[in-house]
Image 1 (cartoon, one colour):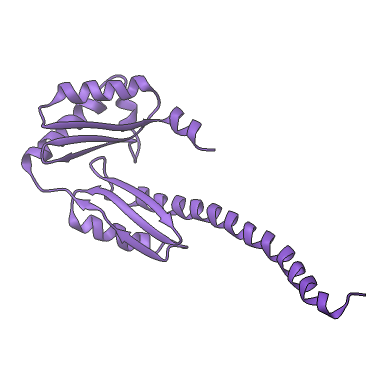
Image 2 (tube, rainbow, N blue to C red; image 1 turned 180 degrees about the vertical axis):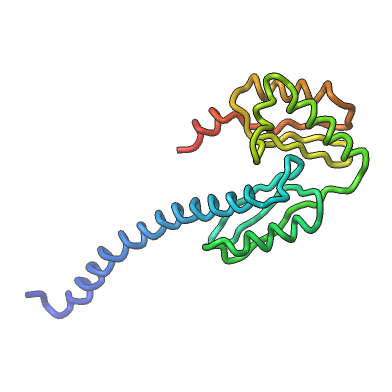
Length: 187
């Protein structure tokens, strides 16, 4: 039998033994939950009927706050995506930081010229197939940025070469990621 002065220590120790594993499991399940919420949000973006190869949306989640960054062509797309993503289960708040690209006939013509060149190239045409192509072409004030994923470094280099020879522009940035690199980094 424990002496009365040891009961407090006993109960405190028992509570800590029971609470710490539950607390740790909750933080692990939150990480898994965050990944699931991000997957649901990404699916909503992909299913958005006005999401094109000329838009780029990136999502991050922190304690239920979804931060949306990237570029879209029209202001109503920014508003639509913010409203749609706010309804995703598990999202408490949406910080919509999407940038609306400026309207310019030069930029519009450059987008079309680059899309035709990239998606008609023998190595790259398959990236234009399907409802959600994996290469996105962002043009802002004559500056070009390629984002998305490709299967190999050769495809990434081919996209760079095609984009550089297809049109005249002011600046170029290739942010295409190779899938094998992404798979090797993620667990």
